[in-house]
Image 1 (tube, rainbow, N blue to C red):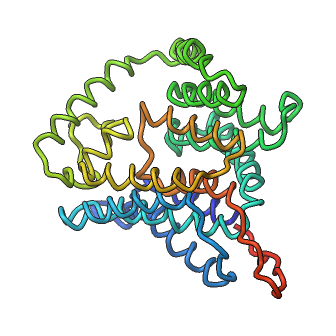
Image 2 (cartoon, one colour):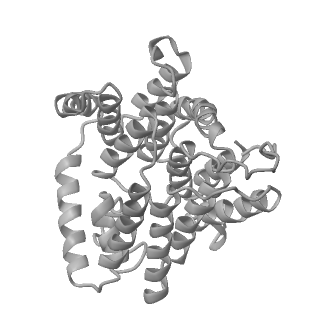
Length: 336
């Protein structure tokens, strides 16, 4: 839990600038979360017993990290975002030390995150509403772990209410897609997602669909004139102040890391699937929800969001059985 809350604190100061007149004393950025994720993660791992077996869930995260480091090295730019991506496999190793606790960690963190979001309603936003919606989306599905009667689960409804208050239409789309898969009725997401997103649009009207189409067009044009390694992590294809990324996971990967980046990430996903991971129903629902949200946004520049995805992937990992003649040692009791 300390690990995730440290990453949350890093997100809160990512866009913070402290100055003394013309002199800038501190300027936040993605490197803050990346540094926290990597350094604190390595400290936790150094104080823990070695992991029995690295599960297949690490490969997509390692593919993204490799793609971002290669692109940053080629363009000599975007090292802060590369560091945030490297934090993803480190977070996986931290959370995979005891996979049975991952869902519980996500539930506890989700409850705390809901409190932060509800507090922001009165204070103003310190954390981007779409980013916190994405984090709440992932945590919400962890409440469905072996809990088929989730209608009586207060924590689930608290996190769900906090998610709705963000008014994130992308978060609503991911929620509908994930819940439909969890219910075994994936087709329900097709009519439900536009209805919920449309309802949130009435509360916060904005031409977000048209804006995203333009952002995607400009990003693809910029990528087409780039190299096999894209235009570099953090490249902004559109001068609009909100277009800090392509607002689509695949297009943004092409823009920042190029075709090679897409191949590395897809290869990591393929390597994971080849090992036939045994996902619980809530994990599959969470991954579908994350994938749906990535169709209209991108969170690969945020170490916290990547760490939460790592927690979902790590939750299903099983420890290797002890060798014959050896005694099984319980997990080392360091909190995450």
